[in-house]
Length: 280
Image 1 (cartoon, rainbow, N blue to C red):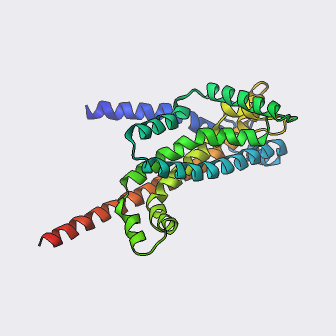
Image 2: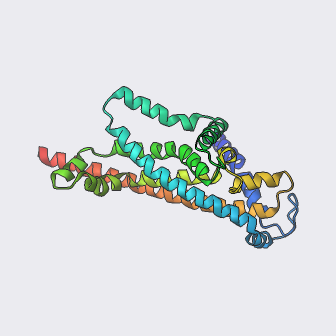
Image 3: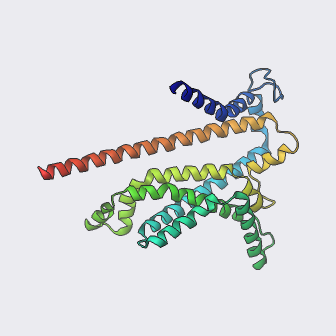
């Protein structure tokens, strides 16, 4: 059983990561061939950094992802705190269900519905163009928000509820207790949620395709337009760079989670020791 499980795991890993490995290898290909590796070269990376149109769309994508993830993180953290404050069980279940809808809903339905709403509101106010950077930003915040809530909410539920109350008993205002006590406790969840929101915004194509205007183009949309003709290996180089950036963010997220779990274990041990000392 152990041998078969190892073989099965190895096959799954190959299936998942073989395409990425091929992409990375061919990003260093000397020729333009997408099937024959003729030699190692940084030629396509140099070509990438001379492609002003691609770099412009990359800049647009990064600006959009940073803005969307930052706003979604602030709103998601506030929403998670609000959900934990709700005492009514049925209302809390309703809020959790409504929060989960954007994650379960197909992207194409979300994109079309948002586009129709933006066009309706734009015509209602007599706007010249209904779709622009603002509509794209709102759309990205909409689908990133539930993922932030999903990461922050468990941290709030795991936190000792008496800690902010103790801080207020010692003279802290509610806001100061929140910033000095609650935020440090849930900070790993906030970071993880922000990283998830950033990567989702960076990667999104379907919702962006329906909600963007003519003057703003993201990288997934540009690559989609290029597939109608030919995708050059410089796109492999760009995808390789993005892959390693996302990998670094994932490592940071996992490290923050491991540090938080260690601190929680230490806190639980200290509580047990205190209880034992009190009994003695």
